[in-house]
Length: 321
Image (cartoon, rainbow, N blue to C red; front, side, top):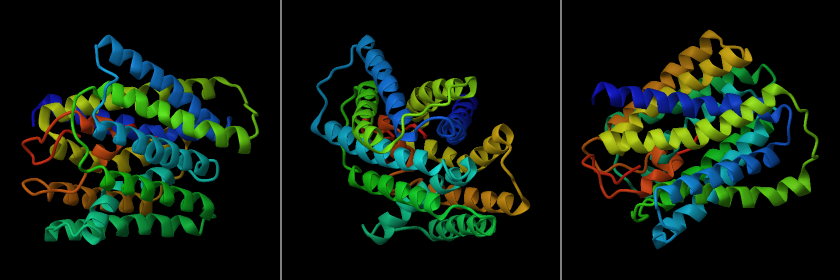
């Protein structure tokens, strides 16, 4: 792994993790589902526009259409929708910690449900990772953390875990940016009806809201996906996914720096344990037949290439949140 790949991996993890803080800033001043639907609409138009400039085709393979629709539903509408709703009541750092357990959930579900074989180091990583999450949640529970917000974030991770495992066999076929853009448009369409039905259309316009919305649309939404695509093309999905171990640290650190959220010794210890657990699970996949990675779940670019030398085919969006 060369210096450029390392810098790209750190950049991707930083952009993906920052999405929770910018999302928290948005939902404090605007309806969450309406904001997210508008963000997906704009990101989708930009993504499709870029795809057309690159002369990519609307004619996707059946596997790509299946992935586009399922991830548009599970990742964009359910996963990010529930996270945006939850962050009305819980801190961005809490949402980031729960979301960072996605690689652990995918590995655990693959082991328990699909009978995937796991190396001892991966089992230890799973126990450590979930233990770190419980440590942080237990420490914050006494501080009045909202149980509904926690439940929504957990449900969001479960939805994306199901989608990840369901699409492990999705075929390749190129048109990566087109898949990215169409997936976002699917999310926009699915989120608009519940937003219009259940939300009060009251927006507290200010510069923080505007800048956070622009940032969320362009950086975690499009730039992170592009960086991930370039990273996986350089080093493969399995090696690239190891950078997800940085997400717990970056997510908590950015929320503390930008929003002033509390960060205690217990949080730091828990984050380090989660990072070690995720890294152990990801590294155990090198040279084996791993389950789908979290990066493959969150970045539609996973559909763009056949199997990589690491044993998996090419690897979101965040696109993060």
